[in-house]
Amino acid sequence: MTPSRRPPRRRATPWLAAALLCALFALGVWASDRVTYQGERTVFTVQCRDGAWDGLRCSGRMVAGERHRFRASRSRQEVLYWVVGSSAPSGKFGDCRVKSRGNWSCNVLAGSPPTIAHEMNDDRPANYVPGLDLPYRAVAKWKWALLDAGIHVFGAADFGS
Image 1: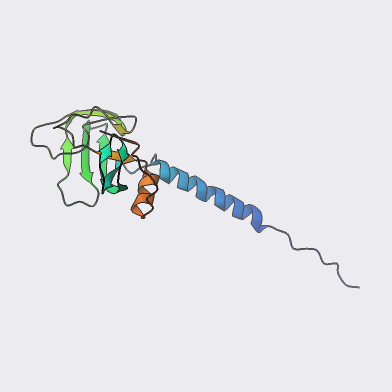
Image 2: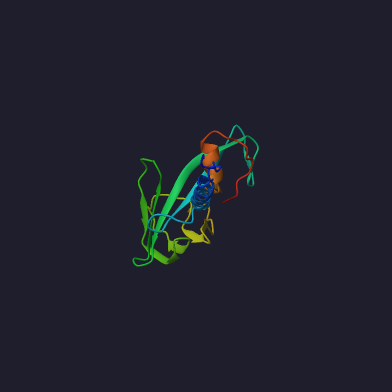
């Protein structure tokens, strides 16, 4: 008598589905830029190559620009800032009111290295002051990553000065 042959069980399918869901969740968290190191907030800027800005719309080809990073400290009521990968000097705002990494306001001292913001509200630079803040246009992290990879499908920035 031969033992009956059963079809193999599909045990891998639930595990693969769970792994895929975890990977999609991790990708979503990364793309949202909600989880950061030490209270940092990065503003992903874009440039308009072979064209000009008309508000937030680029008449040429929009390309990835600099990444401006801000590290806000509630305990010290200060904000450190720098451009990622740049040899330009970093700066520090010492006279600040810091509520969180994305909600702070600072008084700028003369001679401070220039940056795109001296204030953030809801994770975005706020209250742009010409001559005090550098002009900029910016996009979400996932859009910047696509532009940086050479995928130029966007023609407008999400926000800017």
